[in-house]
Length: 201
Image 1 (cartoon, one colour):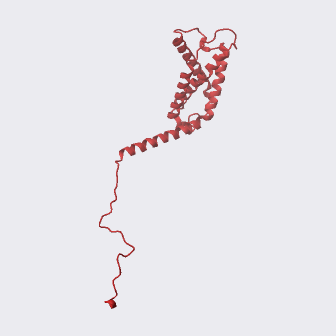
Image 2: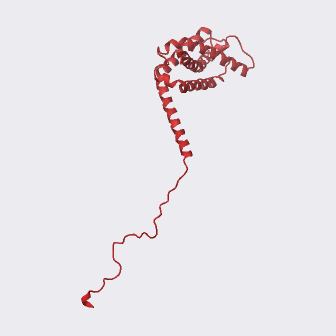
Image 3: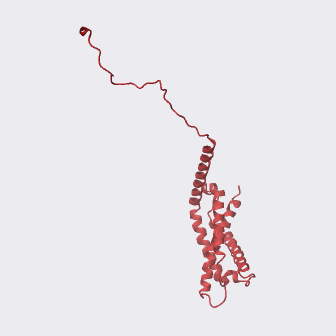
């Protein structure tokens, strides 16, 4: 399997997660007036939680499909740092998509050509780049541990499923042990009196 196909899923998951973390940070700073009195945001964070859930789902899907390659060290032979430009580009595309969809859902139209950035362009891109770097670095250091944990969970689920199937396929058998009534238990004591000696007769 080509490494490019393995890396794309990882990049997409990190891009969505990074966008979900950076967007509320940028909008909070803008709404607090840190960048002046300009209207840089739509004053809505409706898109943050769904985006974060989608990013987590993509990461779980990636780990389920690619965990063996990650654990074996074949997924990122040169580390995750060379993936940063791709992740950042996908992150900005994700930001545009999530903000545009939010504006259409809340207001029914797009508010402006640059409102989706949430701040002055240079500041917004800088914050998003820093978030992209931090998220990628953390996942890059933790990805093998996450992959190994995923494999253990998969093995556990398979073991439980196999046990359940085997248990359902085996008929219930009950064995009754009955002692025959003719079999008498040994008696350790005598019953009755001893016969008289012959001399007494």
